Amino acid sequence: MNPRSAPSRFAYQARRHIAERLIQALLFVSAFSAVAVTIAIVVILIYESLGFFAHVSLWDFLTDTEWTPLFSIKRYGILPLVAGTLVTTAVGLLVAVPLGTITAIYLSEFAPHRVRETIKPMLEMLGGVPTVVYGYFALLLVTPLLQKIYPDLPGFNMLSAGIVIGIMIIPYVSSLSEDAMRAVPMQIREGSYAMGATRFQTAVFVVTPAAVSGIVAAYILGISRAVGETMIVAIAAGQQPNLTWNPAEPAATITAYIVQVALGDLPHGSLEYQSIFAAGLVLMLMTLFFNIIGHVMRRRYREVY
Amino acid sequence: MATEANHVREIRALIAAHKRWDHLFAIVGLLAMLVGVVTLLALILDMFLDGYHRLTPEFFTSFPSRRAAQAGILSAWVGSSLVMLVTMLAAVPLGIAAGIYLEEYARRNWLTDLIEINVTNLAGVPSIVYGLLALGLFVYALDFGQSILSAGLTLALLILPVVIVATREAIRAIPGAIREGAYALGATKWQTVRDHVLPYSTGGILTGVIIGLARAIGETAPIITIGALTFIAFLPPSPVKSEFPFVSLDWLFAPFTVMPIQMFNWISRPQSAFHENAAAAGLVLIVMTLAMNAIAIIIRYRYRKRIKW
Image (tube, rainbow over all chains, first blue to last red; front, side, top):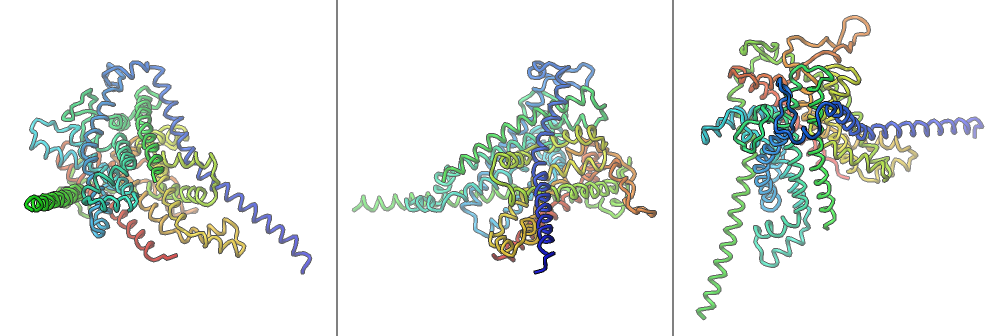
């Protein structure tokens, strides 16, 4: 053996080792970026909101019933925006939950293989349509259609925005619910059939209850999508903050307010500028709340079998 | 005897009633499923009928205008392409690297758990919150301004979870024997990943990247938040120059608009002539996103068929 080869081999090994370590560190930094992004979101929302709450008392923010930061008499009550958000979300869920659940039951328990393979990707495409396109659809097709049934409906209203949000979130609800139902073991269905149950009885009284926590997790994902949806409500619901629970009225949501302010050229550091971060913080807390519930649900459902 | 026959009849009636429920539900289920599909088709058809006559070559080569009939989407599609380029360059390496780390390198400890929880949660953060993050971080703190760079990075953060999750799933599908084969020949961990794991998972990763980009191209809210303009009658400086060093990065800091914002701007106007433009722009947008989604589905299907471990 050549005497020079041993040290050079060690050097080669050492270089290789260092390179390996370097790459591992680089990969770790990339993975950690997810944590960094979360921290950045929290820091920026809280930092700008603190500036906002230095001028507006938290009590007024949470209890005042008017939101008029862009008028000469400024009132900063978040309630109208929260009400608008909740109403559009509720309408959306009234559409998406029944349709999504029935679709999931049908796809998982009734549909022939062929139908499932063709329809499921088509449904998933519903979730891929740009939301600004949905906004167009809500304002220029759904609202005029609704006005034929209900002539007093204003051109901007939460009803059509909510219905279209519901259609948009159908695939989120149906896909996840179907996964949960397909995860129910075959023996449970066979047991039900052995007792003489029909397909319908098995699907509704056996499989659905067994998958219930997964299905609820799907609903919660739907809620959190609906709460954060922006363009549909900014286009079709009107942008006037309005403390009302009537879906036939125009109103603004938290997200629509942020868009409205961002469209105007606002000076960095002004109270209006800070107000969108305070609104964003409320939005973030609402979705975080739902995401945590969803997480708990999914974890519980994993332990069933 | 008579009562026995009655029983049989009752049972038969019961079975028939139950079967009717089965058929009824099959019909209801089919209808519920069709609501979504029919809406999708109605949406596309409605926009097509409103906007197809605006889809002339001039529509793609004209700037927006005060006169609806002369307005076009030139600055919008150029802006969208450049923003997508930045998004891809930022999100793809970062997302794939994060996916590789989590799947191949990470030990199970609290730090890994923390990263995983964050990836899951980021997927559920509303897109407009990313816009607020970008406004505070990219536009003001890092002083990138209301530029293509800020927009591209914002969308990159937005689709990062999609790329990470797709990469992990693609990598997880590769059997351990492939890795063991590489190790047996003396390959290091990184060599194994680079030469064996990554090439085999390209299909899955590509699917995730395309789906992520399809989502990014249609995103409006975060771009509005960072302050993209709605009326741009010029193009960003060209990335290619005639003199040395031939490439210019000035376009990164140029003001811009993108397709969804141009469409939003046209919808927000009261005149129906502008609504026709919005429909035409929406048609272009929806064809692009649906085509990308379809390509992703085809790739997934192909790879699943071809590779047999």
